[in-house]
Amino acid sequence: MGHNEDLRRYIHSATETFGTHYGSSRNNSLRLGIYDEAELQLCDFLQTESALVVSSGMWAGQLLMKVIENISQRDPDITRIIYHYAPGVHPALWGNAFHRNNGDWSEWAMQTVRKINATEPDVAHIICTDAVGSPIVRAFDFTLFNAIQNPVNAWFVIDESHSLGVIGANGNGVVECIDSGLLDNTIFVSSLNKALGIPAGAIWGSESVVETVRKSPWYAGASPPAPAYMHAMKMLLEQDKYEIARVALLDNIAYFNRIVESIGLFDFIPGYPVFCSSNPALFNHLLANGIMASCFPYPSPADAPVTRIAISSLHQKEDLDRLAEVCKQFIA
Image (cartoon, rainbow, N blue to C red; front, top):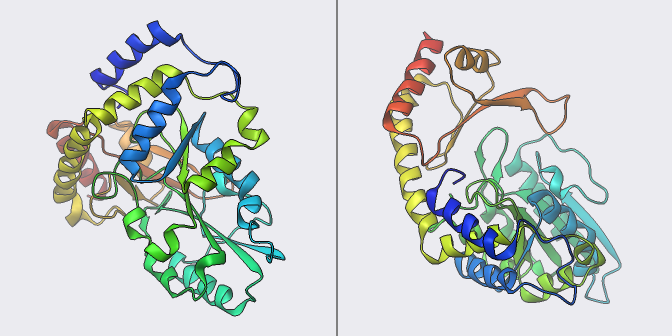
């Protein structure tokens, strides 16, 4: 989306109106209506009660983690809180009592359900996970959590940064995978700067949850994203420009998948634009052939690097043919 002509045009015209940034609190006496308008449009896209835009995806996660205990302790009978961190969860969701978990996601989910069902009803549980595995791409089965016997005290925090705009019937993420009995206590955070191309972050869920975040001092003390980008996002959502780009992206994913699936080089999931390899030599081979992939240790410097190839809606079939050719040369 960074090269999308509609996005560029909307940003340029909005900069003439709003300037280059808004370096104040959104709780100030001077308030720009474009933020509320963009959030309403985002709610319509996400099919959610309420949404809040902030300066980045990282801050969206950390802001929520600063107030999550206030949210989960609204029931006066709650006496303590237990955190459950998924394997590979993004640092945006690292909060109190965080510990690394390097196990299998499905086994972690089933174990978490068993722990929750075995605890007393005066315990609140905060479950933190990404929507899609990263850096190695993995699809997660959220139906495993349907076995929670008393979901009223179980709070889900899901980072949609790598799924928003791509996964879901219209690109609105994994919300369709969450059971209706769990959805009231599910809070989503995301960067808007992946598929949507907007340098900002968002938090969404029930109105009461979002209002708790909105009233926090950490929200009041931080400047919002540039208003020109909020105008651009609003217009792109209103005019279904994202859906047009998403259709092109899905076509490119299917095309590239067909021409490389037989070589067995990549980890990938159907309909998802990232193809991963743990082979340390692949990145240098691609680079030597004029192709820049992503490759760095994640989430800590001690982790093994993973080569990630991201397909976009801008890629032409000739680009994908060349990429496939170079990958096949590597295997040979």
